[in-house]
Image (cartoon, rainbow, N blue to C red; front, side, top):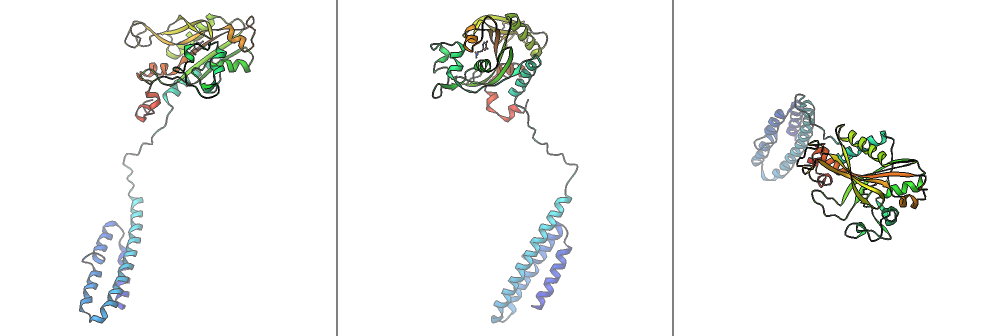
Length: 333
Ligand code: DAH
């Protein structure tokens, strides 16, 4: 037992002196390893008379556990101290993963930035809309093909996922007296199978301007200015006669191809023009529906596809990429 006391003291001293990994490893081998001093002690057991052996063995075991515990504690302390000192300032750093705005949000921000500087206020409306606002109030008769299950997504009790941002026009006119000048960006939903150019959810920006004496040339001037600021001063626009239930007359808007400047290329299918959205003069029936005097007020409206613009601006050829949220795609913006 006295031997053990002096062994303890000797071990403690050696342990305190072991200040790095190598010293600790050597200490461990010399004391606690297979050829270490404690193993030697166990061997001495054989030289004792039989009855003394159990007590001796038990005492060595206690000592061994004690030294092992002390060793582990010291090892941990040395590791931590070394860890701090081992910072190598010449190593390259870990670049923090950087967040960013979704490409659609970036395009949306540009669109709303341009229109707000032109004096348009930003409004929004519910994505779960009533059939009444989405269709009836927009002069869309019950037999119109857009109202079929195959095109639109219906919920219960006259509700549906809005198929367009146009019902926001109605909601705003019901609440605010003209003159008014608003845009309404937001998600819309259609019963479409996803493919490279279709997504059941996509984004539109609605525009509405109602005032005294608003004319079709105001519409043209506004959209021309918008597209110039969006794509550059060189763009031209053209209006193709079309039909929408809520505008009369109605027109689809094309922009001269931003890739070939109208000369004809793959993107514009050699037409020189890119289809951008719908527009027209607000149909008097829509104005009457919200209680406006059609002798006093006129207005124009338009609806633009956001993904279309993003795809052109960024050279993205599949709309689904915007909604898969694959980090490898998103990090490029
Ligand atoms: N709501 C139409 C659509 O989703 C787009 C549209 C066309 C909106 C003409 C308008 C408009 O405001 O005047 O296809």
